[in-house]
Length: 238
Image 1 (spheres, rainbow, N blue to C red):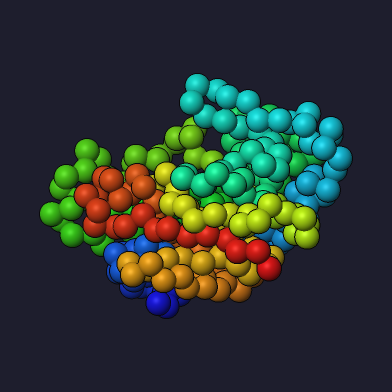
Image 2 (cartoon, rainbow, N blue to C red):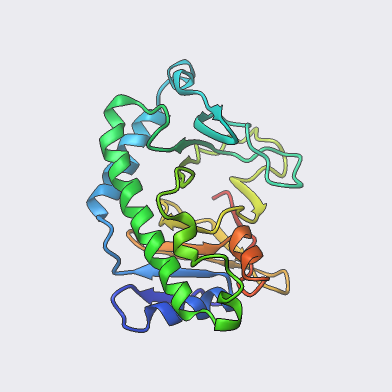
């Protein structure tokens, strides 16, 4: 299964995204307007944060606001649905309203805004390229469902070096589907991302630095009546 690479500047990009989502639930966006320099700096500066001692990171330990959890999540705090073994990762849920290290706020919000704007554009493309018999069932256009939402999240993931004494069967991210509309995933610094096809076979999702992998998630599948499948994916250990 080849995950389609889509040139953001192509006049047919929206149609290609809809086709790729329909067939595989995944796509890779190239030549998009996000700043590679900003992405590089975010990776480096948040890498410094994750390198801190646990007690320093725990000053930003996650907390709940209504049904939303924001902040730092240490190792062994997340299991994929149906999995008993925690994923080998730590991560940070960033929201503009949430608690964030002061020296990272401006930089992180810049990337957050760029990704949010891109996500809004991609949903507009889907609104325009999805069959009318599907869109006429929406209460409002997809792009309007997320406009100005305070629940759009930037998830900053860190996969630490793999210890030889890890729990047998533990991987960086066990097989799962996402619960949101769409996920925008800037290319990681290491390989390992895989997606599952309808036959249950796994395929590598290869991105160059600066590319963005996009996948359909549960809410999009739900509101389109299954027209766009929520894609199962995972991240393997090196």
